[in-house]
Length: 315
Image (tube, rainbow, N blue to C red; front, side, top):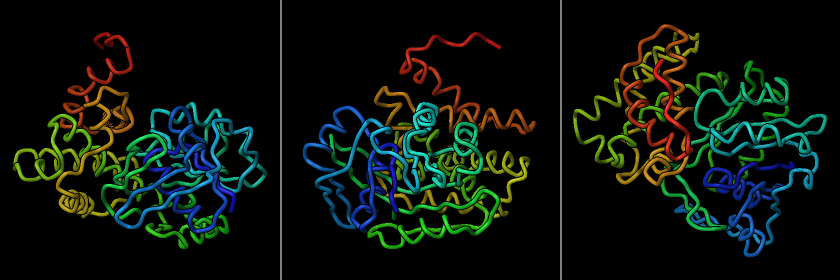
């Protein structure tokens, strides 16, 4: 397959490199010093599952220079999705499809509004990874996994083709769940509460789960997300919150969330797509989400400062 990876950070850099290593034709859409280093020295992934260096690496900041591809993996941060969607057109051929791998539950709808419902699959990934320096990706935790599927649940040739590509990749497991919406929400139920609590507490996973009060806060925030999902008709099973807590317990002791790292380092984060989305969707469905509202309100001043935005007027 010819695959464009839109965003070559911790997620796109890792999964794109593994696909290229497996023999797929991969081009990275990147920018800035990271792009310069990839072009000059190649893209290097450091992982307990094996290092890989792509040299030469097909990389550009101009989608028009790439042309039509078979699939586009959207790997930018959730708050960058609007700009990415507006830049996709040169990559889209007659049968090109798009797979969002962002945190959150709104990416597929946002992409569908930009490029058409028929082009968009649902998708998610699980990995702890980050850009450790220009042209360098470090996989720091979790067994890397990607899941995707048709939003209506059909088994289609394009889903199977992308699955075969990932099946060949070293250091990646792949799934094609029948209900990708439920799978995306199950991840959201974990990542939004964990990211919010970790950012407020400013501590890694091990410290959070050892303190009973903090552990209970994560679990209560997950329960709120579960109730919002069920109110929206998402088919999460009764044990989803327990699954989320077991995932927290399985994280490396020093694991941190990307939103947490961004907020603590003064960068724009995915707050609006995580804690903010729980608050918005909870209000839409009439479901109280007091723990998530507290997390969101606590982190919003730092987010506004990072974005150089003025405080919002009281509503």
